[in-house]
Length: 194
Image (cartoon, rainbow, N blue to C red; front, side, top):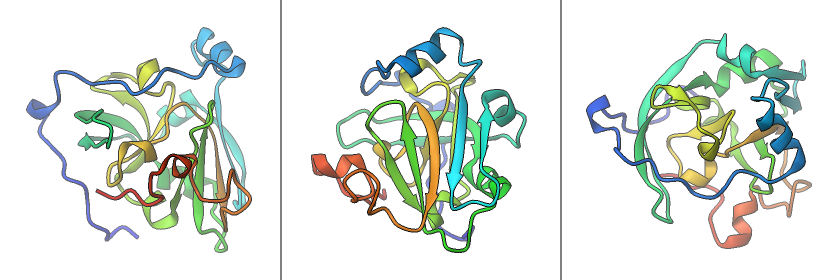
């Protein structure tokens, strides 16, 4: 799966001066409580069709191999920009939990309703990662703190913000409306490649 095409990466001099924000942080009680505590008690639960389900703390994720990339965040609604993202490859985390051979998709859920999913090829792609940094700083709240998914080869809505848990599954029929994304109800496509 590592031989798929890569999204273009840019030089640091090309990073956008303005990094627009799409939407406000979740107003749910769990998210607001975690945010007030500086995300010290936050955990990213990874489960489903895995051998070793686990809930990772932010500190644990930051001790894993670090990846940075300067890529274009493309958005159909105009929230596009070039930024440097820092985090851990999603493939590294998935390998730690041991993805089942039956698995076909990775579904990502935030503390609000805007969930989405990827097929395994994009989940294991070297430019897909769990981002905890933006332009050399911790990920700001409005950009998805403490962790967001970053999918460089797809439109921005596939890069789910405010992650709470990830589920590895063999089908998407029993999740949400069964279409693979909450965004399909608003007219977006499931595969949002750029």
